[in-house]
Every structure is written in structure tokens, then in C-alpha cells.
Image 1 (tube, helix red, strand yellow):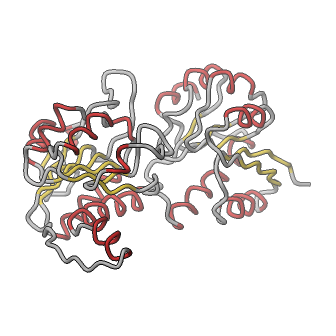
Image 2 (image 1 turned 90 degrees about the vertical axis):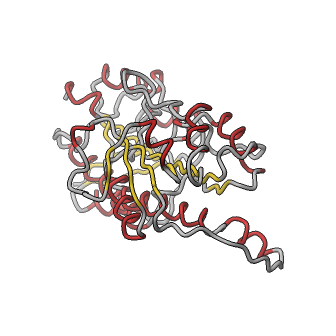
Amino acid sequence: MSRTLKILLCSDDDGIMVKTIKNALSNKGFEANIVLVRDQHDADTISKEIVDADVVYPDKAIITKKMIESAKKTRLFQYGTGYDTIDLAAAGERKIPVCNMPGITAQSVAEHAMYLVLALARNDREYGLEMKEGKWNRGVGVELAGKTLGLIGFGNIGKIKARIAHGIGMKTVVFRRNKEKGNEGLNFVDIVGFDYLLEKSDIVSILLPLIEHGSYRTKGIIGKKELEKIGGAGLGWLINTSRGSIVNEKDLIESLKSNIIRKAALDVYEMEPLPGNSELRKLPNVILTPHIAGETREALVRRYTLIAENTIKVMNNERPLYIVKELQSIF
């Protein structure tokens, strides 16, 4: 006899999610009652549905202490890569594991981050819009071979992007917190200081998790002063596929208006969805994508399969995979 579980997914179904999770659970004797909350900002509905949910996939929805205290049946909060929208202390007090999926979207995010570099190099935004308007304005792009790519962060995504850049013929420099780890065998990568990277890179790509507290706080680490350093070097381009709050958005807008930062390509924003009246939408020297770097079919199947696998583990009283570091000592 199958056991019925309520799984709360704060997401829309992309045609892959529900089918993948249900099939994986069914193969292990579980029947999934999946509840979708398509609007991740609908706190009222999330608060109502979380009360009797066995497993919660918040995605980018904010999970408050009050929600966690009311989640009497919940055995798992399963995230993708980032987990900055949940009250970790409250989850720890309730002894509910919070898990993420390190590396599961790394290939997809690295490819998208590199696409954004290529799009800037070939004026993709301008040509795409003009061609649709019936124009035929040919311009001059930028050859990337020989240019310096600065990666802030050198986890799974950073390593993949470094390999792609190397294949194009770019020089890659990296700033990482754990300098003693070096380039981990990627001998074409130089580990450098933070300021050196900002001042010497043609293109700076942010590949860090958002950390809002503690000694290694990453929120707002790119502001006016840092943007001026980036703008004073080489091409003066900025790529952000990590979290919007790592960059001071107001400072970025001003630096783009004044052409200190000549071009930027962004997949993440301080407020998501990006407001319709955001000044970023009006700037000609910015390429914008709607937080889709990790949204490929292959990455989604891996993500949804892991949701099901961790669900099975907690329901069988086993330790789930990838408990976030802040809570590992509890479980």
C-alpha cells in the first residue's frame, strides 16, 4: 500500500517537474499529492499550504519563522542552489533539515554566464532589436581571445566557466576566499587578490553565493568604489548570474548611465521579478535575462530527481543529501 505525501512546490510546472517527482516517488511506494503555488510572492497561500506539507520546495519564495513554526508535518525544506530566503535558525530550532543541491545547475549556469559574455561581445541586444524593427545596421564587435576574464568565486560554476573561457583563448584570473586551495589543477587560472581582479580584468563575472551575515558577507560587496575599479580597466564589463543583492543595484545603474561600466549583463536582481519600471530596463548598455541561468531541461531533471530522492530519505528516517553547512551539526 502506497503512502501519500503532500509536497508543496513554490513554482510553476514546466512540464517536467510534477511528472519527474511523481514517477520517482511512485517507484519507491509513495503517492505524491503535489500542490503548486505558482506565485512565489503569495505568502498567504504558502502559509496556508505549508501547515500540512511533508516536504517544501520554496525555490525563491520567502519562508519565515512563523511559517516554519506552523509547518507541523514538514520533514524537509529542499532548495536548489541558493537558500537565502529561509529563516535557518527557525528551521534548526524545529530540527527540520534544509538542503540544497550544490553543483546540480553548475554546467547550465556556467554556459549561460558565458553566453552573456558572448552576447555583450557581439552587441546581441542592439542587433536583435534592430533586426526586428526592419533595420540593417552593421557594427563592430569585440574579439574575446586575449581578453582577461575575472571570476569572483571559484566553485563548480567558476571552474566550468574558466574552462570555457580558456577554450576561447581568454586569460582567466580568479578571486576566491580559500586562496590556499589554489587553482585546483587548472593551470591556466591565476588566483589573485580582490582589488587586482577588479582593476585588471576586461570582464568581471560574479559567481558567489549570497551571504548576508558573518565574516564573509557577500551582500553589497560590489558598490560604487568597486564599479569604478572595474570601469577603469579594459572593457569595463560586468556579468552577474549569482544573486542580485551582491551588487548595489542603484550604484550599478548610475555607473551604467555615466558609462563607468560600459556594459553589463544580468540574470539576477535585488527584487525579483524585476519591476516593470526598473531603470535597468531602459538602459541601452545592459542585457537582461529573467533568472534563467540554471533553467535547462537537463538541470531541471537532475533537480527534480533530487527532490524526490531526498523526500524518500527523510520519510524513511534517513539523513538527506546536502544539508546546508549552517545546520549540519544538528543532524
